Image (cartoon, rainbow, N blue to C red; front, side, top):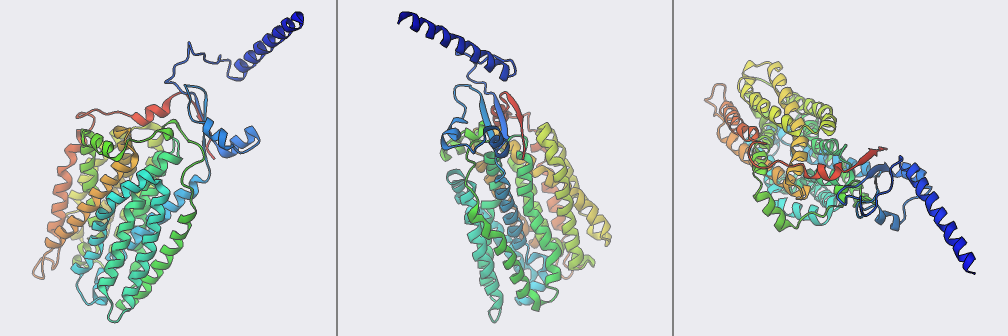
Amino acid sequence: MHGDQTERHQTHGEAEHLLSRDSMEMGDMRPQQTPENKDPSQVQERYMDEQSNGEASGSRPSAVDEEEVVPRNGTHTEYRVYKIRWFGLTQLILLNIVVSWDWLSFSAVANTAADFYSTNPSVINWLSTGFLFAFVAAAPATIWTLHTGGPRLAIITASILVLLGNWIRYAGTRTSPPSFGLTMFGQFLIGLAQPFVLSAPTRYSDIWFTPSGRVSATAIASLANPFGGALGQLINPFLASTASDMPSMVLYVAIISTVASIPSFFIPSKPPTPVSPSSTHTAPGLRETFKILGKTPTFYLLFLPFAVYVGFFNSLSSVLTQIMTPYGFSETESGIAGAVLILVGLVSAAVTSPIMDRTKAYLPFIKTSVPLIALCYLSFIWAPGTRSLVAPCIILAVLGAASFSLVPVALEWLVEVTWPVGPEAGSTICWTGGQLLGGIFIVISDALKEGSDGVPPFTMGKALIFQAVVSAAVVPCAMCLGLVGKVTRGRLEVDKGGAAGEQED
């Protein structure tokens, strides 16, 4: 009996030795870490998609497997990205497109809308201004929703508001006489929806995408918003060439918005397993979040230029027709100029975002883009006066390229420098500042518009000077980034830990 026990112990020891040697050979000839030589702060990770993981294991991960992918005591960890993430991202894109299209539905045809509602273009401007102020009203609820319920709840909330707002607007065009008040109420509801989808991209990319794809994901979803504005600028003048066409235009936009909103109810709330080490991070509570942001000088230095430039983009998009028409441009030509601003910007962002994903050169890019944007606003003072579409389109193209490329870079860099704060807080605050200033800038621009005795009549030259001066005033803030306050890359440092590579779908 004693001999048998000794033999079994020897056999068991030989098996352990063979298993240990096999484990070293299968692990790139690196011995497994022991409690003595293991650094708990280091995590060896792999990013895989669900398909490649299924091929490796022969089955989908079980609930137990999903729990085991979370890092534990510095051991080998496998992270997965899931193809379903593209469904949610596509839904964010569609909602941002229709929300922005809804926003500029009437601005693109301001004179025609004024005739339809028997009012003047200054009153029509309030459809855009009220929309932007609605964003501010919904901002606290947006932060809470994204922080507690995540992107899915925010997207569903936005979809419900978009559906209600669009059909209420259409009802306002069908009353006799047309009800501007009912149209305004519908517009306000859609404005309440905007922060839920415009502030969601950074939170969504943080949950569903790895470090090598977050800037691009944020860019695609965020910049879909101005793309919707471009569609409105370009298409709506053709849909409503006369006042009698207004109900049909609003109906077409309502149908498109409805089709884009319905899939929101079917998106998943989060991936089955974390996609990166930072995805397992639990953000501080809202009270602690605001304390951290309030003590971060870098946040203020980035917030000011971001809010001002978003505000002027909103203002310029809303009153561009009124800037151009005093110089002999038609509403269609003004729409073309607005579309150039946005479409060139989208192309530029599509090129720069993947580059930023690879290089992470956020700060140099921000410091280059901000002065260029200010220079464009300065140059645009004289562009309409040329009475040729060439000068406005060239300047707006450069302005769009610089502005649109800056937005996702600034938002992702903000997440890094305010870590461990959740992405939703800083993003929503910055967007809210931009919407608030946009509404204020529209009011100021309208007040600076010349009367019938202007040269030319109703020119907005003073408004262009105003936006050039304010744009230049915030340039020093961007130039001080990295010089004032502590700059960290908290999330990138967490994700950087011993990554062995990533396999995309």
